[in-house]
Length: 86
Image (cartoon, rainbow, N blue to C red; front, side, top):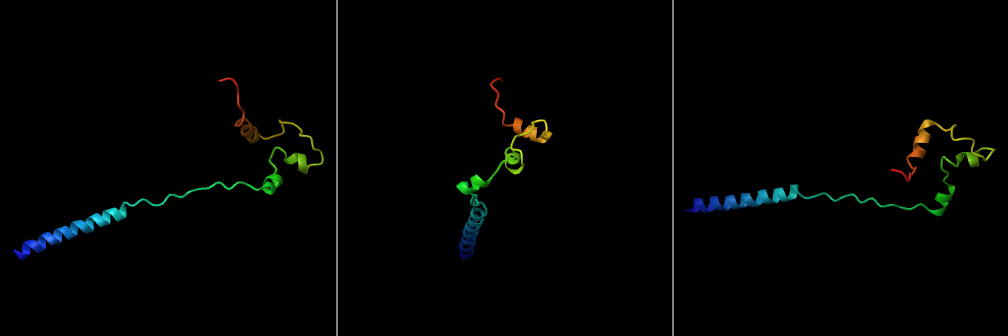
């Protein structure tokens, strides 16, 4: 009689241990939240893009020609081109 009660209690305890282990393993990790930090006015003002680089760094402020740009830069410009035709 005592052996059966002890065996049932052992099984119940074993079930509780298995349940707690599976709950602990299946907990989701916290997700990383990325936040956008806008630039300050000074950062925006000091930043010069590749297009306007020659305007501020060279003696002649005129942009020479689009043909002087590399093929890669042409592709970068074309990726922002929006056409009215599909």
